[in-house]
Length: 267
Figure 1: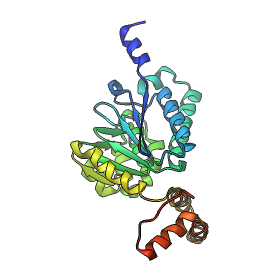
Figure 2 (figure 1 turned 120 degrees about the horizontal axis):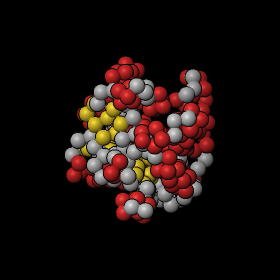
Figure 3 (figure 1 turned 90 degrees about the horizontal axis):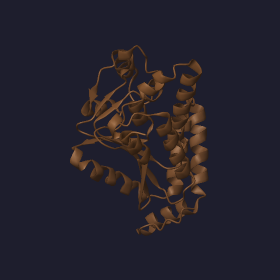
């Protein structure tokens, strides 16, 4: 085995850091700009599944090691196994991962720097929130290779306007961080040196709230997006009624009336 292969084998594909309720998952293929190999997708899926069952995990941050956030699928790996069933399996695996981000009880924040292209741009779009450094660039560039970014288009079209999404999909051109902010693909743009500080502001704000409301609210938000207006309001009404039965909701209202800080119990 070569030294390079040994080094790759010894290095974990996904890094996890836990700090005061915030779990940071870092894609760790920096030499490949964190392209999503099958193995990395599997590691990320397993990591998210563990977090979903972890009551101590309140917020998730997805980051990339090295010079980029994520450059999309590993094209060399895809070409090495060109059979249609292998391709279908890969995209189904990746689609499951993207749905897991939405269905995770905890909010997920993308920490974006460098490039986020193709499935990497999809990953940004499927996270609940995204904070980007001012050197970030985004593209769904498969069309440049003769491959329309069909799966990335699902998340992209649910973040930005139709014409803006189709312009990116049909041209494969990059947009910068400010354009991504203006189009709704990211929430905030800051200098690279301030990226972690800005994410910390978001995580601190979320951590100050009861996890009961955060979990119920995230679940309702995504469900109602796919509904008609009547059904959406029915779901929202039921969610609020159930939320009002929670101990933390009653504590929050009592604390507001008494002009004191609430003491959350997670119930």
